[in-house]
Length: 448
Ligand code: ADP
Image (cartoon, protein in one colour):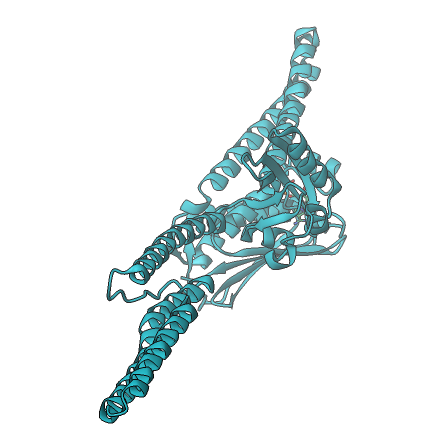
């Protein structure tokens, strides 16, 4: 358009110049007029040839420049509008378009940021795929759990990214059926973890699937532990109860008439009842310790006094068995913080075991300052524990030597209680033992 205007103007000026030149030819006497006409004509031609195209084309080039910027994604520019002519209207339309685009873009960005924030703060893993099971999104939980990175995964298929045929099958099932799919899947990440996977097909123009991964490994472990605990506890309770019932039936069926036998049966019933009561006591202690683990009292405790009292409870029994009981506590032992009743229980259980599993030997209790707290060692020269049992002795109901432990009236809960109490105080518990040589249980308790 600019070129056409330029050409028209130049042509008309040329004609004007021709007319003026003709006038000059017609009037020989009009030399002055000729010169003036020539000068005016030329001046006008130059002004029009240079000024008019410039006047019309500059706003148009601004519109073109801004349109180019918008096309490149820069929406911050606006075109100044001086006159509401055609070019001015064009500039206005461009400005409005840019403004609307700016608004839409900021809405889209806000929406995207909100979605990203939700995805980032989710506790579950998320993978979204297109209709070809190609990954279009992975959230940080999923990246961390499966050791993936979003950039390297986008565009690849779910099978290439997670390398699990069952998961790939579930994605395809959700896509083909258009219905949600739920399943529990075990993945090696690299350690085995159990996930509940929930896949929802995307509705709308674009097909795809959003899969949610909830890690239920810990929950399942706790459920299994609870079931196992209930089974074990029932079994432990049933054993003495069955025995009591058997002897009571025997008494009722005639043993009562034989005083000697009746006395023997009653002694057994008494023992079993004591075992039952010990078991219920320990179960209650364990339940209380587990439940109140985060609510333990935090008082300064002088350990020597507390340990001394626990030791006194076993002096008689030890002497009866011909076992020496030595205590070596340095006078400058710093205080520890905790619940005095529970910490007493720790040393009572450890000393009870030491006396129970030591015949004619020696038991020593030693304490020392260590890493801002105190370590107490309870050592014995008893039967010791075989290496294959050591990792399991802190489990509930675990007994290294079942028959001997049963004879000694043990519940298999003592060390589980000790471990819970010590760890609940922020400390730790270790054991060193050799069969037939003896055992040392070391309790570390942090200071205030
Ligand atoms: P309990 O002593 O009531 O059986 P514990 O949980 O205290 O239950 O101990 C679990 C098992 O660990 C015991 O049955 C025993 O086999 C072993 N044990 C614990 N302390 C000692 C020890 N001082 N010497 C040898 N074995 C021990």
